Amino acid sequence: MTTTTEHRPHTGHEHAHAGDCGHASVQHGDHVDYLHDGHAHHGHGDHYDECDIEGLHVEAEAHEHTHGDGCGHEAVAHGDHADYLHDGHRHAGHEGHYDEH
Image 1: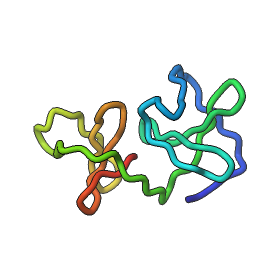
Image 2 (image 1 turned 135 degrees about the vertical axis):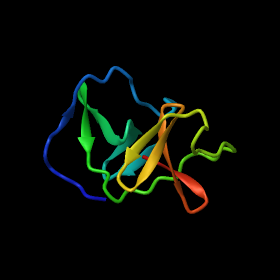
Image 3 (image 1 turned 180 degrees about the vertical axis):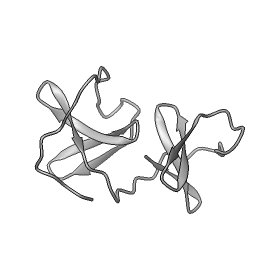
């Protein structure tokens, strides 16, 4: 994963992240990033900071639902594939499972 020393506050975020907030989390150095709406951020004082997630591979929770045309979840173009908005997450198919994006 790419890291940066640049301080990039994430604005307009009303949701409080925690271990049970429903968003995927990943350890990132000395803090935990929460994957949310296609990006990662972590708590920093009274706000959240953005983190670079390029190359990050976080497998989504297992679920029986298969995403695709007509599945009922909104598709969002993401590079060379589509992510599907699912229960507050963005899922992308990857080698027999879904990744969090």
